Image 1 (cartoon, rainbow, N blue to C red):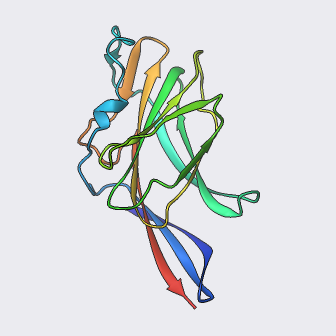
Image 2: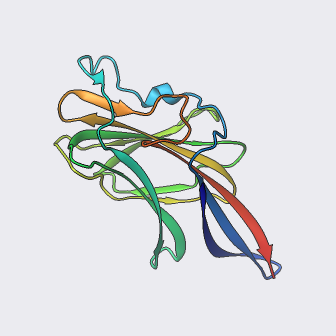
Length: 185
């Protein structure tokens, strides 16, 4: 099943208003992941980490409205059911010719590594160095078009990491969101 998000955004084109439709696909594979191996742990830094079974970590992309931005936006978070984590890495990848939109966060909480390649994702790395039960605030303002995939890797506080397999386009730690515009008079 898919879920649609809608928001009216005035774009000033001949007085018309555009309606933004975001569809979160939960089952269909839209594209094959490319370059997501870069979200994995750095071998020299995390030599002793092993891939573990997901015990309740979930990537959530939730629609919200911020008055100060005057736009519909989405909060992006990884929430554990019961297990703390020490770091979260998030790959954000757009398909087609559109961008990933805007990502808003505090530099004290996250670090952004922009990709120079149109086929590789931007990476957002949490700067947490202690055990956490939540991710710091991360806001995503969607672009005008295209599909964007969020893929998370969670480094646990017990020396393991959790992520979805590369072939998964929607799972516990992978979410694909698509944007469509409709013109309304």
